[in-house]
Length: 155
Image: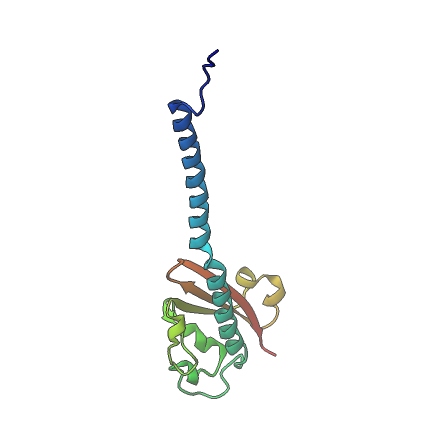
């Protein structure tokens, strides 16, 4: 007696399995690509925050008001909190003596110093002499800006 059985798969089954496997591989590949392109984001954001904090620390160490008249060109000569308002958007990251930091070439800074009023700082700080300091650090590659805000009172 002869048995008539087949071993293997039909052409239709083979094509369907290839399509299903291709879709699965495409999904996994898209996941890896998405993960690898955003893996640098947390590091850049941490650097932006560290840069902003260093600027805030430097500004907070300055007197509230100018005690001695002097030149206010260049951060090395800034002698009060308001002088930092001269750092406009797009300024390259540099140390306080104006030396650019090449490792931070993709970043830029902006500093805005304003006198607190009810509309800008709320009722709590309007009763005292206070200044609102906003340091914004931008990164060209990610097109993101992280602002850090501090308040300096006249104490």
